[in-house]
Length: 366
Image 1 (cartoon, rainbow, N blue to C red):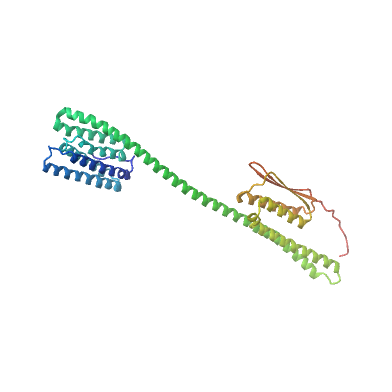
Image 2 (cartoon, rainbow, N blue to C red):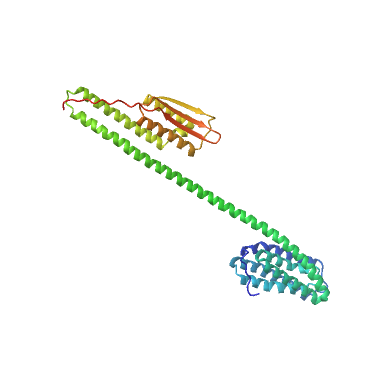
């Protein structure tokens, strides 16, 4: 037995079988001494006890060595020592009808650590060793009886051990999958947090660009009006008044844009109110600011929405009303509708076409 491939078994599996091994050997010795054997002399008893101690020591230490190193040579040495030693002990205790039981744990250990073909080989060696031990004392008939009897016992031990191994490995696989699932959930939460942070960053960049464009445009127009106000002669009172009023209107528009952008960055209304209540507040503020008749409707049963759904809808309503205020301020009516369905939520914002003002050209002396 030069090497033992163990690629289908875990080296640590041998630890699972070493304590049943110890329990079985100790139980056999207790039973043997409970039924004294006339054939055992005091020196024979000492030899049996010494051999049993070595058998246990090699079993425990060999199992631990293989569990730590995973070396097939350690496993090969383990069986090369234990099988002949157990056979010698059975030969000495052959008068005790349960003596061969001390070899059954070796068959059980082989299920834990060996591929199927090597496990069958070890079990064959165990049966052969038992047959030889009994045959040396009782002849061929005793060898055959021992071989058949312990073959049945080994088949039973191997079957039970295989069920236990499968159950333990299945439980370990479930625990491994649960750990992987937990790790995957943690990564998924991290990815979700990163995606949310990226979305917030993009939204802030968009709003910053929008503020730059709108407020920059308003400030430029305001600068023109103020320059005109400075350059107009004091006697041009009406024109100075119009320039001042236009400048004031531009300031109000800039302040409103900044407020709207800040609200878009942090839709605090959703932290206190439902989506329907928050959009209703937007509609009321829009109507008050623009004096455009605005109709607000909610259809279906209002249900709480998670932030990932409520925030985009709220910001969509903000953006739509802002676009109407900027580009369709002369619209006659605006309709805002929020519809709750069994599986969907829909928001619509519609306005009538704006009134196009007529243009009149006036000439005058420059």
